[in-house]
Amino acid sequence: MTLAQPSHQKAKALRPGARRPAKELCSECGLCDTYYIHYVKEACAFLNQQFPALEAQTHGRDRDLENENEQYFGVHQDMMAARKQQPIEGAQWTGIVSTIAIEMLTQGKVEGVVCVQNTPEDRFQPQPIIATTPAEILAAKVNKPTLSPNLSVLEQVEQSGMKRLLVIGVGCQIQALRAVEKSMGLEKLYVLGTPCVDNVTRAGLQKFLDTTSRSPETVVHYEFMQDFRVHFKHEDGSTETVPFFGLKTDQLKDVFAPSCMTCFDYVNGLADIVVGYMGAPFGWQWITVRNDRGQEMLDLVMDQLDTQPVMSTGDRQAAVQQSIPAYDKGVTLPMWAAKLMGVVIERIGPKGLEYARFSIDSHFTRNYLYTKRHYPEKLAAHVPEFAKRIVSQYKLPE
Ligand code: FAD
Ligand code: SF4
Picture 1 (cartoon, rainbow, N blue to C red):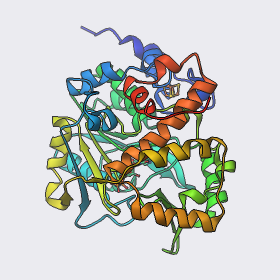
Picture 2: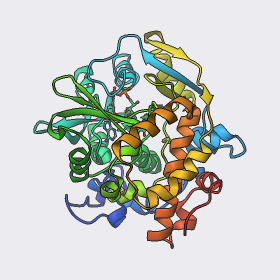
Picture 3: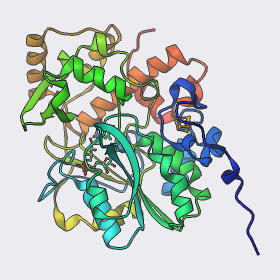
Picture 4: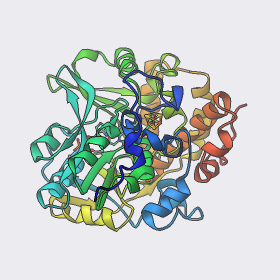
């Protein structure tokens, strides 16, 4: 007996460069590069906001809005700061993500790992793959800080017959993945997420590097760190730091992708486990375990980590409120003032989870204003309830 072909397999992927259903809001998550485009109206993070339903499907419940940590950081059962005892050379931080993925594969929990390498010509041009060896996972270490079509390999997953899969990805990719998960014919799906904010196209990344770094062509790695500075690492191993307040915001205002300016899933609420940094002390990574699958992944690497409980000090709210009109007007401080402000804020400013809340508040208020001005008809349905509550703490300009 032959089984009927699932209806999505008859759908036609879009050609590269063709306009996507979400139009300028498309984050190039990759779904529309596959026959899963069949589900795009329900699945696309920018066409259909459905956090409570997908949280319930994934974690067994949606986030508790009366609990401040859940409101901000999503459904979770554990949170900690961690770092690898032996960091992976060249990873974005200490390589916890790559290490979990390698253990998942070598201990037989999954047959493949969706992750993103770079193209041979360009260290920042993403190339999603299904890794089936530790070497292929290691070759995907370090952020490709641009929109990446991670889901473009999903069709290959189904065709390969793989039944147990790990997907590494950022929020918009994972929202779409969760929406099509049931149609993928998998026995087990694990999702290892990272937070994500202010992503850019490859051209936008170049503009950011050109306006911010002293040597844009030699940058191999950068991160917006908890000390309120962008840290660049160059090919020769040297480092360069630029204070956030000294960024050329007048030129950078339009550099972020419209998708990221309307995104409220900074903390990747639908992953099983999330590995970032912003809720941890400087130099440490930040782990949020959302459900039992996330705990299962973390258990595989616990003996390779130093950990400490999360902490939280300072008060973010005045700093967030002051930054709203400054960002809105594209104000750039002279470098001496920016450095001074960075030093003061670092000494007395928010740390640990309060720093994470500072970053979430700043981005959600900015994105709420952007959505209201550019997509007023989408505002009510697109902004999730948890984000509306966060934004309502602040006074916004019209
Ligand atoms: P590594 O072991 O180096 O592994 C990195 C993994 O990231 C690889 O497996 C790779 O497949 C994947 N990856 C790389 N580029 C992309 C991409 N464009 N899309 C999807 N997956 C990708 N953390 C915060 O706390 N706050 C933030 O604001 C924040 N912004 C981020 C923005 C982006 C675009 C990305 C990709 C990550 C961001 N992170 C953020 C997460 C953080 O920078 C680290 O990626 C995370 O802590 C893991 O570090 P690691 O050393 O364990 O990762
Ligand atoms: Fe398609 Fe993803 Fe773009 Fe939405 S964000 S239109 S699902 S490629």
